[in-house]
Structure formats: structure tokens, C-alpha cells
Image (tube, rainbow, N blue to C red):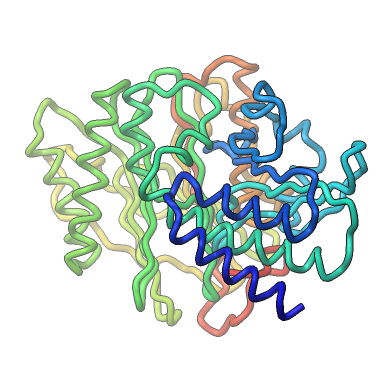
Amino acid sequence: MARDRIGLAEVLAAAEDAAPVDSLDVVARNLRDRFAARYVSFLFVDIVGRRMLRVHDTAGVPPEERAERIPLAESGVYDEVLRSQRLVLAGDRGRGQRVLAPVTNRGDTIGVLELFLTEVTADALAQIEEAAHALAYIIVTDRRFTDLYHWGNRSTTVSLAAEIQRQLLPAAAACEAPQFTLAGALVPAATIAGDTYDYSLDTHTLHLSITDAMGHDTSASLMATLLVNASRGARRAGEDLAEQARRTHQALLDHGNRTFATGQLLRIALDGSGAQLVNAGHPWPLRVRDGAVCELRLAVDMPFGVRIQGPYRVQDLDLRPGDRLLLHTDGMQEREAEGVDLPALLRKTAAEHPREVVRTLVGAVTDAYDGKPPRDDATVLCLDWHGPESGALRANASPRP
């Protein structure tokens, strides 16, 4: 056991020393050698969370299978691994015992590690699970230096507008901390419509935002770039919520061309002392409390970029431990998605992790278009507020941060 643990530490060090594109090879080679695995492969979850893509395999799987696209709804065991965030033993395919482990970092599901073993022991399974957690950290580090991982979570062609839009999103679609768990998702329209979401965590505060820029294609993505970076710039300068809203608004005014965008900006104190929200013409949030879903009918100011708008109102948000908060853009409820019942879906997924909630919601919107590309972006950001006294994650969350 001690020798194997040292071996794992050594391979992690070797992965760190390797080129970013080679670190997966280093980990896979070590796992094959230590456990006599027939092969080791890694499957990415795509950016929408509806497909998996096998982009890396080091043990002789035919080339035509290495870019295999697997719909999660039809994958069975892969979906089970991602939902449960637990190692799963699957059936023997003639190559040995199939072992699958989630590769997840702070609640953000990156993919699944898959091995076929000739012999399965409890100690081997524990070490494979540990290796999968370590692999998540390796990928998070290495994806700063290579496009391999960006390619890995794309299962469709990406337009210029979509490329701009995706670079505005947080690097991780989910985040877990003792005080909260959150997840976001965005389904781009056939002609990109400028939706974004953002979050950041500092010593004392959780910051959230969701925006919907007017227009389509690259014009909407460029306007979204102004919105996100103006908001981030004010946030990173330590400005309060009112000033963050003012700078976001002013960025669109300075740009001209009668552009505007709806949005919501939130700040939540991690010590539980309060939560505030600015609503710039955006759909009201939904809150789940004690099983009941309600719309938070807060005051609504004009969208960012509308010249007659004065200072934005900073409103207190009633947020208690155990609450679930959902922010969304109008693409979740308009056109073909008009019939999507968000409150009913929130009640149905009340026991699920936020990443499963957003996957269910964007899946419902996608399904409403019956296989056609959506005509408007649909974006959701789901927050579970545990409160300052919560030292444990939800029971169905990832077992390690």
C-alpha cells in the first residue's frame, strides 16, 4: 500500500513535469502498469452537459473510436457516474472488469476515467478513485496551456460569436464551498444572442451575475464582452454593487449604437449578514424554500445602456440557509421554450445537485425545439445557499472539493 501511494505521488510529479499535452499519457501509463489495466481512457463532458467525447486513449482503441460522441441520456453507466459522483463497476466486455471514476474538481464535472482491469481489489479501486481526483487537478492546471481540453468539451462546430461568448464564461461551470453550491449552463442559439453568466468568490463574498445582450451573432457577443469585463473590472477593483452596476451601464452608453442588455448582479456575504441584488430589466429570480417555488418580484430598473436610467437600486435579497435560487434569461421561457415549466422542474429536481438541476432545465429547453437549434440563448445559474454555519457539502455532492 505505502509503495503504491508513493508511486501515485511520483506519477503526479511526473505529470507536472511533462508537457501539458502529455500529462494524461503519464497518468494513463502509470495506471496500466500498476493495475495491469487492459486500457485506460478519458471521456470529457461537453460544455452543455449532454454529451461525452472520448478524446484521449492510450491503449490501442481503434482511431475511429477515439472521437466517439456519446449522448449522456443514452450512455447509462457514464450518466450514473456523473450523477452519483461515485466510482462504478460495470459489466465485462471481454477486456476485463470495467471501472469508471468521476473526474471532478470542486463540483465541476470534467469527465470520466475508464479502465478495464484483469483483477479488481478494494485497494485498487480506492487508488483509482484517488487518481481520478488527482487527474482533475492536473487537467485544471494544464488546460491553461493547451487547446486540447477546449477541443475535448466541444461536440459541435463553434462559430466566431460562440467562441467569443464561451471565453466570457467562468472556467468551471460549477463550484462548491462550505457555504454554497452553484452551477451554471448556457445553450447557445443558432445565431448567438449574447447571454452570459459569471461568478467569483473572495474572502468574504460570493459574486454572481447573469446578462442578456440585445442582438445576435458577433455584435451580441461583442456587447456581452463589454458587459462582463466592465462588471469584472469594478468587482476586482473592490467597488460596491451600485458602482459595479453603474460601470456596466456606462460601458454600453459609451459604446453607443443604442445597445442595451438586461441583467442581474448579486453579492452574498459568506458570513450570512446579507445578500443584495441589482435588477436591470431582467426576468425575476425563482427561489425554492421548504419545497415551495416562488418568483421574487423585486423592483426592476431599466436595462443597462438605456440612457434615461439613473442610479441602479441595490435591493436586499431574502436568502436563508436551505434556499435554492435560480437566475435565468428569457430564452428559458420564450418562443418554443414558452411551455417549459420551470417551477415544476425545480420541484422535481429538489434533491439533485445544482449541476443536475441546470442540466435538466437546459435539456428541457433544447428538447422543446425538437432537434432544431434554439432561436434564443437559454441560460441558468442555480445556487444552493447552505449558510455560514454549514461545514459539510450536500450529501449528493462530490465527496472531495
